[in-house]
Length: 262
Image 1: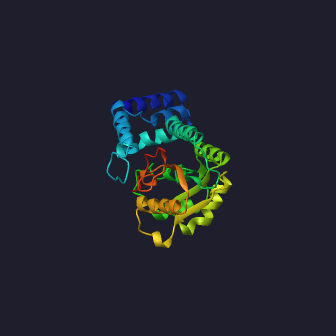
Image 2: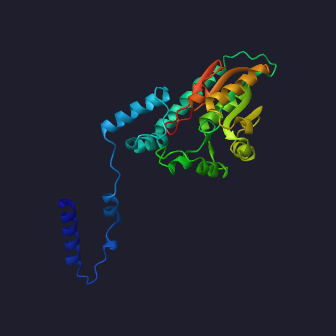
Image 3: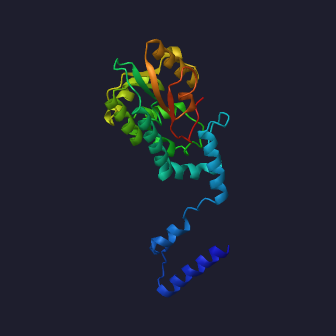
């Protein structure tokens, strides 16, 4: 009430000094209006709480979760759009490149690296920005509509890793939970932003409907091994991209505090 009274008194003084018969508040300087709606900084307690929560997410210490905590929406927004997310992505890519450079390839075309697609090669951040950065329950229909636009951007650090692996001589397998029905738009989106020369793109077929991601991806990796491929590396933003059997020699978890896929 005190703030409103002060503002009212200020406006009254302007009105009195102007001598205008028809006072128009919209003629006031814009900075006054903007300051009234300035975003409130996160408290130290909220930052600590949400940082601990994000650590638990990345370490896979939480039980399956459906949405981010309500109080962490602005925290996740800041993490995804400021320096934190980009820095963490670059660290993962750097470590993967260091490891890949030490691998002795056989030269028979059977040394491979597996990549997930969404939030590993492709960034769907514009979609999640419209849905509270994970604050809303995941909507398959709405997400598929976004996918069908084919406008997802590359995760630049992953594109760098991808290109380095191809140069080193690895065969690249793309393994995604996307439906086989979205093969064409997925290929179009990937190639448009710089991903080329993969060996196989494996999507969820009709026979895979209903399978949890961990089961699906484990089975597909098992088929690779049965075909004589050696899985040296595996990159994914979900633990379900990396767990199960068989596993790669090294697995690289990209950060993703926005959603969880079992």
